[in-house]
Every structure is written in structure tokens, then in C-alpha cells.
Length: 276
Image 1 (spheres, rainbow, N blue to C red):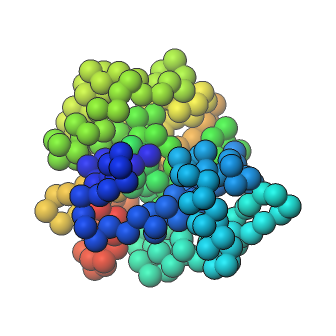
Image 2 (cartoon, rainbow, N blue to C red):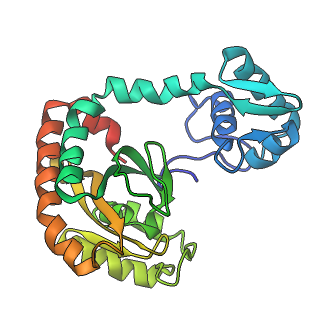
């Protein structure tokens, strides 16, 4: 999914920015084509998933193989561990462990819930930090996990606080994918939901991404009141009701959000990197 509001290539492969390097974009597109459902792919499969001509996909794959980011097993290509250096460089350079993890670990220790921090990435949320419990969840989440914004409390806490034009760009993606009978899928209902979230300062989701999951999330604001991220607590509906979750977790989440916002003032580079 492309970033909402970002410049994207036109049908002829051009771009609004003359400095845009299409070869780099294509290489990154190939890397991102691999996922849990597609751990290994043939050349033709990579070309199909990336919408690249086979000759272009082949050159990208050969380059990535030479660089050590992609390997080959018989006729199929697969990612190699070297790709982890790309993500780990962000985590190390932006001081994620020092700034974000302590408040999230505090939430986990106080509640027994999983706690996460996510940012918007196009029409998805992207987990930047996650502290899990020993309990097994139906939906696994971790650093780098992506979910559609509309089906998560984190996504709606973020979207509700965007500037009008950016929020409208997200809403333009409706009708949204339905995951359960409780998923909000149409634009009018989502607009109403986001207005409520903006007014009360949090979102709570029950059975919206998958059944048996309840969560509550609050936004994280940076300089000038710009939303940069959101944090949540999530757990199983067998442990707690939605009303009780909101009542007991919301004060803790707001305290943790305040800690992170104060820390971001000391780490302006991290705030800049998190901004949508």
C-alpha cells in the first residue's frame, strides 16, 4: 500500500519529483514482496506480485543477491538475514529501546496485557515497538507487523488526529476490508467513529481485526501538536470486558503517553522519523 498523501509513480513510470530514483524504488518493492505468505518465490511470482516486467524483476533480484539481501534455493528466491540490518539500524539509531520500551514494559507489567507503539504507513499501521505477554494471541504482532488502520484501535487513534486532508485521503480508501462482522468498512461510519475518537482522546476496538481481541489506544503527540504515533494495550476478551479495559487501562496509557511525549522532546530525531 502506498503512503497516503505521498507522491507516487504515474502510469508511465514517471514521478513528480525529478530526483526520484525509480531503480531504487523497484528494488525496495521486490524486497517488500516477500512476507509470511510468500517466503519463497520464483522470478515470475516476484514479477507478478510487484507488477514489474520480468526482466526488471530479474535485474533487481540479481542485484539483491549480489548484495546479500536475497538468496536462491533451486528456482526460488528468498530473503537472507542481512535484510535485518536495515530495520535494526533504525531501532539502534533512533534509540527506540531507551525511549519507548520502558513505558510499554511498565504497561505490560501493570496489566498483563501486550503493549505496542505504532505509526501510520500509508493506510496501514506499522508496529515500531511491541512488548508481549506469555499468553497466545489469535493475531500475532511484533516489530514490523502491519495491519490496516481501520481495523485497529491504534490506527483509529492515529487517523482521528491527522490533518483534514490526510484523514480524507485515508477515508478515500473505503469501502475497507471486512475482517469480522464488527469491522467498520464504510466511509460515513468511519468518519463518525474518528470524530468520536478525536473528542474523547482514545479508541477501543472489540473483535474488529479478529474475534476474541480487545484493545484501547491513545495518540502520541509531537511538536506543534502533530500526532506522530499511538500506543495501546491489547488482550483477550476472555480476560476482561471492553468497558473494564477502558476504565482500568486508559489512565495508565495516558501516563505512558506523557512519558513518551516528554522523551521525544529530548530526542527530536526520533520524533521526526515517526511523523506520518
